[in-house]
Amino acid sequence: MAVDEIAVRKGHRYLTVVADHETGRVVWLGRDRKAESLKAFFAGMTKGQQQALQAIAMDMWGPYIKAVREAVPHVKIVFDLFHVVQGFNKVIDQVRLSEYRQAAAADREVFKGTKYLLLRNRQSITKPKARAHLKRLLALNETLSTVMVLKELLKGIWRYVSRGWADRRLTEWCRLARTVDHPAVHRFADRLQRHREGILNHCEHPIHTGRLEGINNTIKVIKRAAYGFHDDRYFALKVIQAFSNK
Image (cartoon, rainbow, N blue to C red; front, side, top):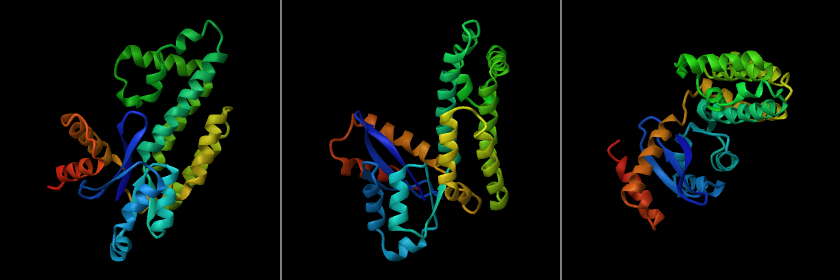
């Protein structure tokens, strides 16, 4: 399975979306993104259905983790690469802002316009001017250069199928991260250590929430086409119906 949340209204109104990872079929939607939201999904299953579950892909959202551990403790939690890198991108931006504030006045011009260059994949930066700008920034600032290396090494952990090798690389990554003189990087390394089991579980269960990104886009289209729904249950049924052919 895969689980994620989607914002359906302004003011932080969310729905929890559960999908069959193999087929991409939405099987359940619940109100909010609390532990109780996901627990309600598991409560609606028979004991046999619960035991048949093997793994569930998600981000490192505490309430979802709590729900799985309490309702179906035998199920392996798998933290997917997309959300982990997304989280580290926020760290990179914090480092960028800190380094900009500490930079000499003459160097600050190099920092301008680099926020999204740092967050994008290096391979997707094709314009020579943009590539040169990024190269100049990384040559100027050692800390930013190091966190960009960390970003690429982080992605590499998910390429391993051997749990032992993935474990070694994760340990090395955290050790290198702690050499960076920035508290946000240290906090992120601590977070990975706390969620180590769920990261390494990808070796046995190479699943992710990527399918849910496309599903969430479809849900947004359904919502726009109807100019919104006042009845959350009816909205959930319309979404499940849209994926029923899967």
